Image 1 (cartoon, one colour):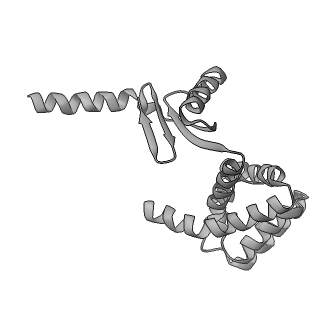
Image 2 (cartoon, rainbow, N blue to C red):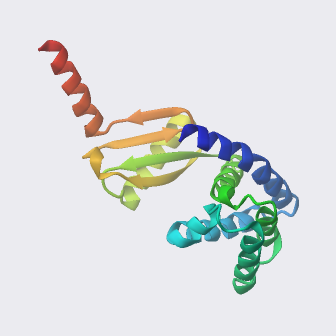
Image 3 (spheres, rainbow, N blue to C red):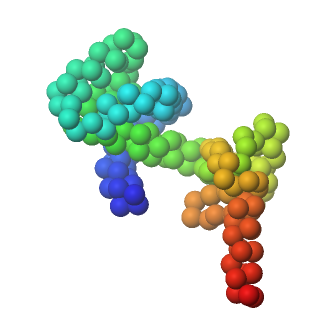
Length: 186
């Protein structure tokens, strides 16, 4: 999985950088990011569309036609529409989610924000999210945007990833550590 993510990153990075440069030149980074968020939502909400993007069975020409029809129906214009059309034409739709993630990372960095992935056993309330973001801002010194994931296996606590740092205060990890310590004693 890691090698696959590395390959996707290698493909996505130049596309995302080029789109970011164009969006910054057009002074429309926020608009492009909003358009990409809509596209990302479509990919995440529709398993069929996500499978379509990744399918090696569907020809590049068919994918281009479907994407063109989709963009026309959505009345998409500007940089996002041109970008998605180019990605389809180049046969890189399978990497579109990675390209969107790379663009969002570049936009956040440009705003002086840091991205943090938070995994919890249950969804965090708005108050908890705000409190966590404030604590991370105090520690890091930059604004923090949170991407929340839920994993019931954690039982309780949080796992927070900021860049290459990871803070794991989950009960699952603590129980695993206790189990290992007890095996060493016995």
